[in-house]
Amino acid sequence: MMGIILKMRLIFWRKQWLSLLFWLVFPLVVTWFVIVQFATLQDDTKIPVGIVMEDESQSAQELYDSIKDTPHIRPEILSEKEALNQLQKHELDSVFVIRSRYEDSIERGSRNQLIKSYQSDLSFAYTPLRETVISYVQQDYSRAKAAFVVQRMGDAYGMTEEWSYDELIDRSKEIVEEQKLLDVDFSFSDSESGASDTEDTLLKPWNMWAIMTLLATFMLFDWVIKEKEASATLRFVYGKLSFKQYLLRNMLIYMCLLFATDLITMGLFHVLFDEAISTKLLISLIGYRVMLTTCAFLFSLCFTATYIYYTSSFAIVLFTALLSGVFIPVDGMMEKWNGFSFVNPLSIFLESSFMNLWLLVGILFTAIWAIRKGEADA
Image 1: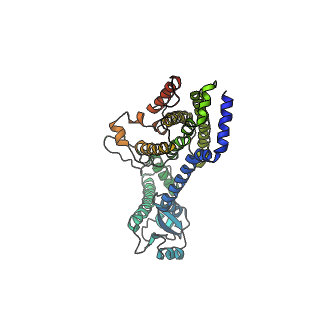
Image 2 (image 1 turned 90 degrees about the vertical axis):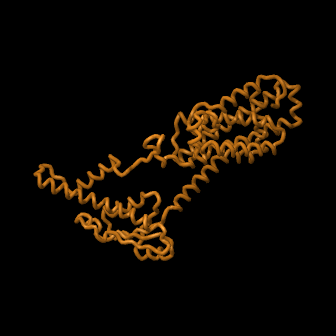
Image 3 (image 1 turned 180 degrees about the vertical axis):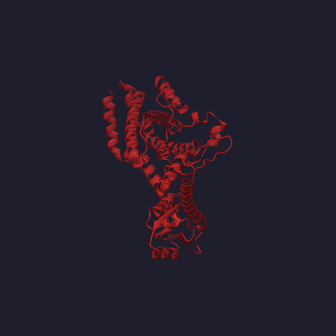
């Protein structure tokens, strides 16, 4: 019997393949587009800075790498003539020239004329940029000065183990890296110490996908309304298979199809966004898919007009997106109400949990509807 229903569903899909394909790929395509555009926007909002490398030494290259690793700066290596030309056209905020013999001057303990800078009348970020670059130069100078002090102390106290200047510099960098001397974690009262707010970004691929697949699932389940109102349902009165059983088995077919799409999405997210694949993610994905399918199925049973169903679905998706914390942080609400995560429809997936209220509601009420006597509609 299941094979016959599957063949019937394939006939329907053959006529509606464009709509079916659209909603199947909709969450993946929208998520990819938004994440890529957001990353491009982040890169465009960085401050453009021209860097002129007159010195090709290792210290000069490390200074450039430090500037490049600064989150809000987008440096570009240019010749001095080209950099000044772009600065004049206001394509750059400012220009910094790493002077020749930069490394030699640092090693000699000289702090004069290491960096030359240019700004224009529209260089709104010149002052903080200058202070940032100066801090990196001061770090190199302090490290070199400390190395000379250690060497002089070794000579003064007759230390048998001699450390060269390069070894002391390398060891200093290792200590900074190991001890994280320049990293400071900020925390507020009544919050966990050392929490990093750079890890919590609003736009994560799976968060965006969770909202989009919620909408897509509701849109795909309009078939329940269309087939429930069709005149062909009268034929089920005289058949071995009831219309209720027909709907349930079709729901299972849709669930399997959507879950297969979810698995493909998980693999593509691993390739596109380097998202990890784990057993915990897979279990959460199964729970989320079961919850969405059963809840969309039950919700569609409550309607007789597709227009009202579409409007209500969009309203639910918008309301869920606002309260789920995907776009607007709801940490305060979660702290005041410990049960918020349990009733949040997306928490089963966003928090990689295994159960929440709506999954229980979906399974329980679908089972009640399946075993109760009466008409197929809710």
